[in-house]
Length: 360
Image (cartoon, rainbow, N blue to C red):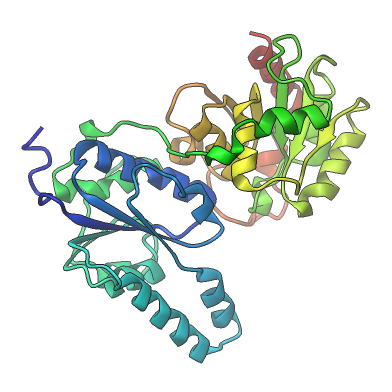
């Protein structure tokens, strides 16, 4: 083991830069966890942007959390307010330079994350091979490129220059819920007439929307799949406030009582509810990885992205990949403007998978 980690100095101060988004930040917790597992004496700082910071609070692998809101910078760029951009970057530099670092790992691969990593003052800065332009300009070295497409394994390459080998990697995401959420799920469900822990009445949480328009399955498809389930299944819709119209469209096709909690929970509260559920049905979006982190089984639907790139690596997760010829384009908007890949997923296939997973 000593030879594996010999290139990390004893007590090394290591900065991880991964600002967003929810799923990607949770993916990157594997880097911090394996680093902590293999070199427990290092000191790990993480630079993150809201709202993803809430998922890192209490993480036992992180010694210090630096929160810098990149959304303010993004708004300034959009308005071409370069004075505000400069102010945001100065504030980031001041935040980063409150503590010294020996090594900085850029797990995002953006021009911005590279710039922030450079502003940290770390003499050794390691970047990963991503598709973004210009990040390498701020790095002192680049991690080796690998043929494996999965994001987590690609993030883990940042540890290879430090002597941590691919075979040392243990998969798994880390999310620690705050103590004040103990008992939250039971009280929340009780107020809404949901019975947790009843094997005859499993709780199915359904997340109908994602931030990418072309990753969304149609409301009627969700409705057709869900209405085939036994009435004993307790169907709960989660999501953001803006998801409510789509949830209501879905519910019209089901013709049975369901519950919507969209907009009623924080990310950590949702995590507590997911931990008490039997299954999550979702597309490729943040709640999928929250569910993985808290140990809830999932059934996820894939079209423009692929589980070989983003899917959970731990057991208990099931995927339905679109049979359409045009899949895994990884584009935020469908170039054909018809979401053909997601529309090719048949509701009866999803219904069959749900019945099998809920009543094995």
